[in-house]
Length: 214
Image (cartoon, rainbow, N blue to C red; front, side, top):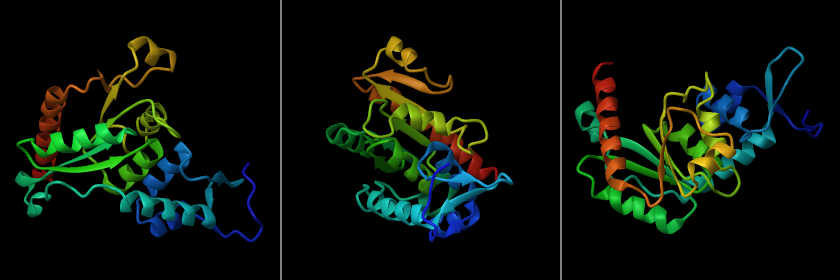
């Protein structure tokens, strides 16, 4: 069990969610993935130190401050014009810039966001609720494997999120590191932008259909 200072105030997941401006399920995802340290009481309830919440708030502010602005608006509230919310998790700034420039040329609206590792990726996912995530696998800190497994864990609330992994690792390398969930699409580098564009277009149409059907 993690030790805390005796004067460190404890928070419930609901209180932490209210402070961070996210849903309780997002807080639980961050706890389960190690983004937000927590422990359970004898009764099985999660408790989080206020200092840990404040630290994450500061880190989120840095992530948001350095994140690119969306490249397209979200359709003015009209479902048929809804933009695809796309998050790219990649630690190579040149490749990230290439993603951004390529997405700008697509013939459908996209809200493009970025993160440089799995930790930032989980923070952005909790904040943005993207329709699709494209991620590298080898990254400093929390890598793509850890991030994807956290997202695809049953009951995570994000287990049906469309995820594409783009990597220089071979199939054997990926298998040696425990593999990936079967619904994750894996592409080898160099990035196949044409195939990704087709998948993104289809994912946007699904999101539009869901929005219209509500």
